[in-house]
Length: 179
Image 1 (cartoon, rainbow, N blue to C red):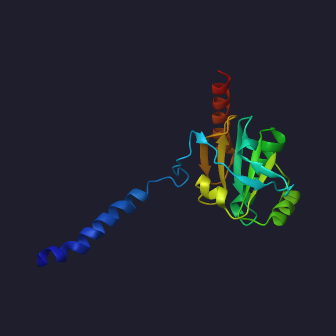
Image 2: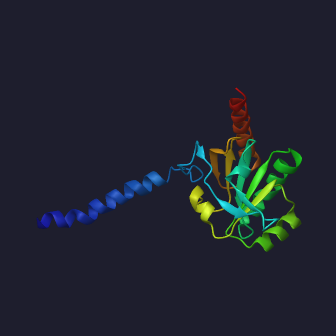
Image 3: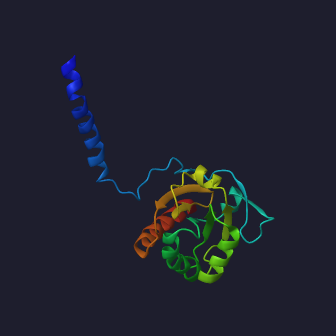
């Protein structure tokens, strides 16, 4: 019995080593989401520009769109914002914003300063909707189909390369719905 206890630290080290080694080859932007192909979670939260107007998941139906989780405290959100401006303002792709755990006044000033690519912005000040979505942190971007179903999730910055992938997926989703 005593020999068993002598090898216990070695066994624990080997088991931990296997998990850490496996983690070296995982892509951190490929975080699983239980919400893929499921309806957008129910919510009732204020609009950024009209705080007295409550928005719900019904506001995210009717068109294939992106939902971008962002905040003024997020440096990566600032880095991706120029790309979102190109997508929303130049290409005319609908983007819904989810202002996550942020001060709405700072968010309005930030969008005024850097331009606003969003067609609608929901304020999730306490992060409850983000929790329901399984948000790990900002930025995260989702593709939502015209029925309000979450079809894809991207964790991290939307770069030009990422946008081309998302755009291709959005086109496929739009054609599927036309059939």
